[in-house]
Image 1 (spheres, rainbow, N blue to C red):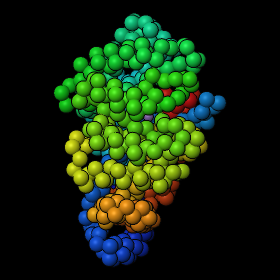
Image 2 (image 1 turned 30 degrees about the horizontal axis):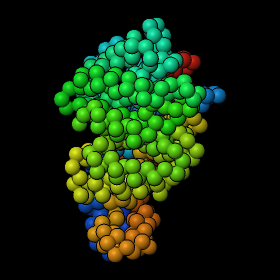
Image 3 (image 1 turned 60 degrees about the horizontal axis):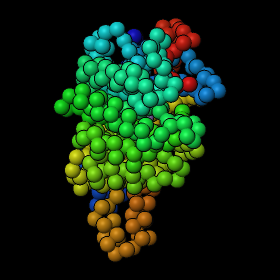
Image 4 (image 1 turned 180 degrees about the vertical axis):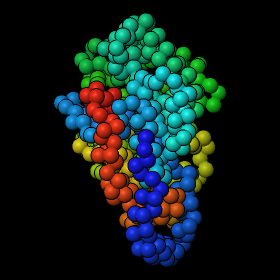
Length: 430
Ligand code: PSV
Ligand code: MN
């Protein structure tokens, strides 16, 4: 691929904004200094806060009604990686890609790994897919996969997960994310206990195939595609299963997979306490599993979740090492732009959470001063940390203004002839 976003383009763009950024950064540094916070210490923390891009998020998503493809969408895994690399060049906080199999299946995984290496990308958690039938598949997942009443179907689903581990080894990953669509649509359709017993039996076989340094992330979801019950419906069931399976199994929190108004930050705290937090699928929502861009709706909730993570980091909580990923569907925006914005918004929440004075907060909690405790969080949340985010990007070789820089490159137009539409693009979820 010809380099559409190169360092010169980024630098040219940055030149226009760097003077005012230096000023804003200095001013914010002085303000933070008055609160006892050193801006240089804060900005350094971003070095270890990286967010993986979901390979499937690079294609335009759809709803159950329609999909409206964009131009120059990635048509295969290599092109998805090119887009991920474009995102990372601009934001410098997304050097990992989380693949989804078989969507991302290629003939030669070593070639894919080399391709990623050349783009300075690595692979995050491997997602298995037994929620869909693939062409030529022997058994259907219409009535479930790992929990299906038929042993043959379960074995086929187990085999796929074990293959995912094998593929992940070649790609240098160290975790498998398992989300199943299994459940029921009508009361009585499925025996709750038997279905979960089958899940545990299947998962324990997958667990046995995990290399020593690997983990298994169990992702729960309250509804969809099953609308009456799902087998792994909430974090309670997920963590119980993770405990049954063993220390390598943990619970993955997708922000869109809970009942409305659930206190997700508290779930996160509980999982941390019992060393069972696998990581996140970040996204935002208003009604259900909307898969909207991170930070587009419930920004305070996202901050409160990150606040729990920073608190765990600060306390050096045992076994705390979550994986951060986005999991979104971009139906009306350019996926690259949405992924840029979303990664920066998650980073923003992390940065704001770093500004909370934890000694003060503890003091207010010990004095039962509810109002001041809340105000301490609000003080951090209401601080505009944009200059720190932009400065971080600039120093790391990224763009001060990633969206404007991306738009100036005419990326999609430039790729249009190299990536003609196939009308069967595998990216994106319908
Ligand atoms: C299910 O809704 C989910 O959140 C799982 O993580 C899937 O792997 C992903 O979306 C893509 O369908
Ligand atoms: Mn997810």
